Amino acid sequence: MSVFASLVERLADLLQPLFAASATAAAIILFTALVRLAVHPLSRAAARGQKAQARLAPQVAELRKKHGKNPERLQRAMLELYRKEKTSPVAGCLPSLLQLPAFFVLYHVFSSSRIGGEPNELLNHTLFAAPLGGRWHEALGDGGPLGGAGLVYLGLFALVTAVAVFNYRRTKRQMAQNPMPEGAPGMGAMVKFLPLLSFGTLVTVAVVPLAAALYIVTSTTWSAVERVLLYRDMPTAGALANPL
Image (cartoon, rainbow, N blue to C red; front, side):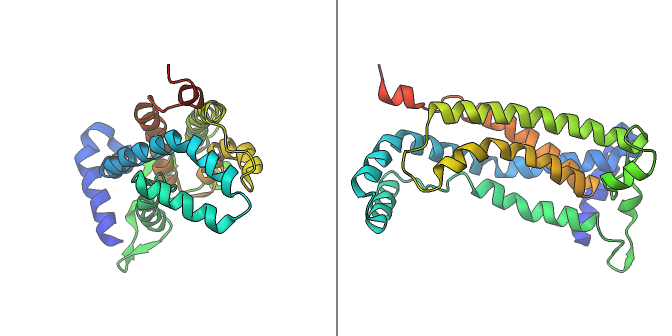
């Protein structure tokens, strides 16, 4: 954890001439971008895997129709299909999982009053008027939603909401183009719930330290842009059914 704190401090020193008192906040944003850049090759691989799954959707539907009454045989048949096509039903999960350690370390650093036996000086750093170790409820108690710290959170909430609405509309459109197979267990509830997951980021930003919120906001914004670029040629159900 002290190594991570030292990394953030070094990045903040480099950015100090440009961002002054908000240099540490800028360092966290830069650190997040570096993490996302490091896992980008995996994101590209995940995109290829999910495109392959979209192409396999008609075959999966046939397998469900053929083996729907025999779950074990259906599972074996689907695993064999994915193995043959060199893809996986969880192809898109790995990039997200690999980011979790960086997020949890950042969360822990800005939730700890001491690091390596010394006072945690990073907690004194700010983004404008908002302490990086502070939380939204503390900002509300210190000036209210329109106070200095409160306005920082309103800006973050506005950005997160914009990204969430964009992701919601895009997910709804993709699910309409690539409908879930009928008869799959729990798919009805999943279809209704999945697009709403984008708005869960609002709750997270409201309860974690501001430094961790910056990581989340930067990462989700990166993800939205990345997915537009990587999935722009995602095959749709209509294209699969009518290739001409």
